Length: 74
Image 1 (tube, rainbow, N blue to C red):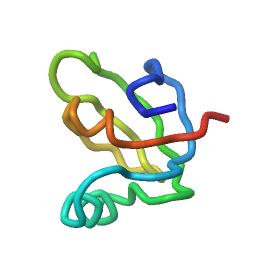
Image 2: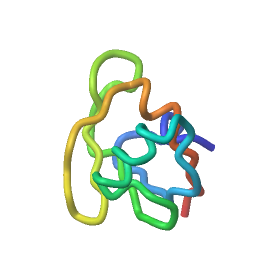
Image 3: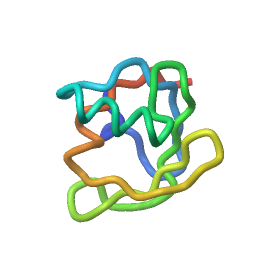
Image 4: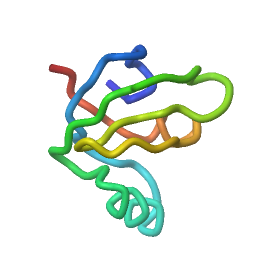
């Protein structure tokens, strides 16, 4: 299951981030690494950015990014 499959308010645990080395490093800087909790706070995953919460920090990520984060739901 990918992050794009979650609805607003749902959360999961990051299993893997798909992408090139630089992309994975950027996600690591944001705290999006294997084992971290991630929650969809709000947003339309088909149009525009999505507001997510990772370990208590909130930030927006693009819709292309949510398609690259493999998660396991609770």
